[in-house]
Amino acid sequence: MFENLSERLDKSFKLLKGEGRITEINIAETLKDVRKALLDADVNYKIAKTFTETVKEKALGQDVLKAVKPGQMMIKIVHDELALLMGGQAVDVNLKGSPAVILMSGLQGSGKTTFSGKLAKHLKSKRGKNPLLVACDVYRPAAIDQLKVLAEQIGVPVFTIEGSTDPVNIAKESIKYARNNGHDLVIVDTAGRLAIDEQMMNEIAAIKNAINPQETLFVVDSMTGQDAVNTAKEFNDRLDFDGVVLTKLDGDTRGGAAISIKSVVNKPIKFVGTGEKLDAVDLFHPERMADRILGMGDIVSLVEKAQEQFDAEEARKLQKKIAKNQFNFDDFLAQIQQIKKMGNLKDLASMIPGVGKAMKNLDIDDDAFKSIEAIIKSMTPAERQDPTILNGTRRKRIADGAGSNIVEVNRLIKQFDETRKMMKMMSGGKGKNLARAMSGSGGFRKN
Image (cartoon, rainbow, N blue to C red):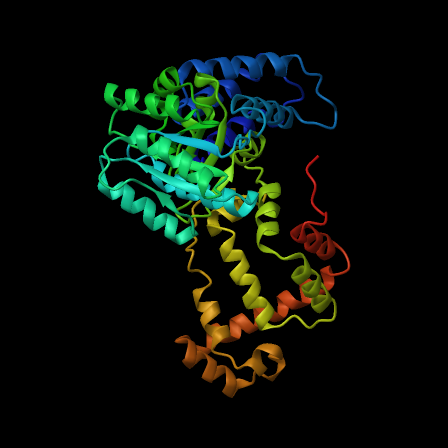
C-alpha cells in the first residue's frame, strides 16, 4: 500500500541532502515535490496545499540540532503532520449498550457485507463479544446469502425475516431477538446502491432513527481515492456517522482517501481492511500509518500480530529448546503455520523498517511456504526430531515424496541449520526480547 506515495516522498526529502540548515529557499523545491506527491496520491488539492504550508511554517520555526540533518528534521515534521491529518490517534468503536448496536453504511461494492462479517469475528475473538449479524439488504438476495456464508465461517448467527421487504422492521426486531437470546452486540448490514440516491439515504436514516445505534460506520473502498472522500461527505451530511472503515487497503491504493477523509468529514478512520481473509482487519493507527507511508515500517503492529498468534507458554518452551539447541523441523513447521496466520506476507514484510522499500518490486506469493511444508511433511517423525540423520538416501526419498528435488531439500536443510545456529546465538540476548515480545510479556516498546 502507498508504494508510489512513499517513493515520491523519499525522493523529495533527498533534495535536502547535504544542506546545513533549513531555509525558505532550500525547502521550496522539497515542499513542491511533497505537494505533487500528495496530489498524485489523489489527495484533495486544498488539503495538500494547507498541509505543505503547515509543514513549511513548522520547518522554518525549528532549531535544527547539530546531530540532526535538515532532511531528517523534515521527515519528522512531515510524519507528525501526516499522523495529525489522518486523526492523530486511534479511535475504537463504542460498545456500550445492551446490546451494543453498530449500523453499517456505504455504497454497493464497498465491501460492507464482508466487513460486517470481519468486524463480528474481530469483536468476538478480541473483545469476547457474542455478536448477531442482521441482514437488512432486502433488495439483493445474494447479500443475505453472502452474509449467511460469512456468518457460518465465523460461527455467528444471522437474523433475517424471510419474505420481509421492510428493513426498518427487520432491524427493530433484531434488537429484541438479541436481548432475548443473550447477544451483547448487533451488527446491522444495510443495502447499498451503485450511486447515492434519495431512496437509499432516506431508508438508512430511518433505520438509524429506529434502532438508535451506538456506532454508525461508513464503509468505503479506499481504491476509489478522492471519490471515496466525496461520497463520505454526502453520507455524513445525511447520517452524521461516527467513523470510517477503509476497505481494500492492501490493494493498489494511492492513499488519497486515508490521508484526506478525516480532514473533510471530521470523523475518525476506525478500521481498515487489509486483505480477503476474515481476520484481515485492523484498528486504524494514524501514527503507524504515517510510519509506513514514509518507509519507516510498523514494528509495533508486527509484534501485536505476533502476540495474537504466539501462545505465551509455547513461546517459553520454544525459547528453552532454542537455548539447548533442540529446535527441530516440527518446531520450524509450527512457526511457519503461525506466521501464515498473521496475514499477507508482503504486507508483513513492509512492517519491518527498510524492508518494504527493498521489496516493492517483488511479488511474494502467500503460497511461498508450500514447497517447504511439503518437504518437511515428507520427513518421518524421527527425521523431523533429529535432522542430523538426514543422509543422502533419506534426502532423495524426501524429495520424491514432496514432488521436489534433492537440490531444494539440501538447500532447506542448510538454511535450517544456519537458522538454528543463529537462534542459539540470539537466545541469550535479543532472542529473549523477541520471545517476550511475542508472548506479550514485554520486549519491544514504542516511545
